[in-house]
Image (tube, rainbow, N blue to C red; front, side, top):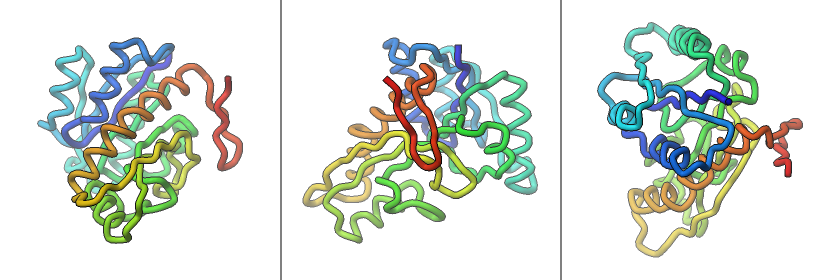
Length: 208
């Protein structure tokens, strides 16, 4: 059984999508073994509690650098015998120590079609603001493996979502979550847990 840790920083809507998928039996071969928050008191920890999943806090404020926090995170993940790390709205920078400890075993969901609107500074509503400013007709979401380059790891799954007349960043954000993020993140986790992902360079092959 693949032991999954979900890393969160806020409300945990993507975490909830994973919990719901697990309850529906859609993550065969895997189980969410831990939820780890970057600050105390976030609602994602309440979601974990309600689902009977152990919750932990490795608070960014307790460490003097992203590297120190990352080292502490890796220690916690190893102590919990975690096999797959999922970043689900995790708003804290992780450094190369995490990537080295979990090569091609960290998944992140990004609310745009990478390589558009990604990289340093593109997070949360900023992504959707930039997409609307540019005037794109299609946006969406991407699940990718995490590498040392921000939003630069191999792409696992993508799903497109149409931009509609009158969209605000908030409306577009909600539609992309509902139609794309909550669909492809559980699917990518399930594929990993079933051993159906093979990485060759920048390409992720999905095995039958």
